[in-house]
Image (cartoon, rainbow, N blue to C red; front, side, top):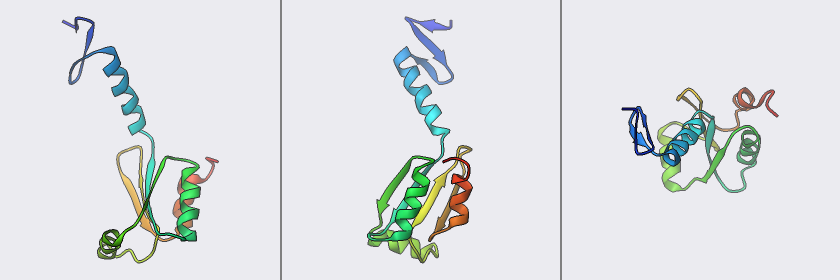
Length: 111
């Protein structure tokens, strides 16, 4: 049986049309790149990185605190910003400091 009381069978069970549209929208959004950028106050490199990447993808900016700085030191990151770009294929790219060449990988030809 393909439907029960107006519900449609999908790979994980039966869902109503509203649930199905929400799931489909979220699935489409997951396929877009996005970035998380840890910054520090008054950091010109941080502002420039956020500005450039936010023109081509959704960017979440987080002001780093003492715990973040400690975690970054353990990862051998010695400069801000710390950037993680989550790609469409499920992988991610991560770096610290102003990396113009890496930023250009994402911004060239897109704006």
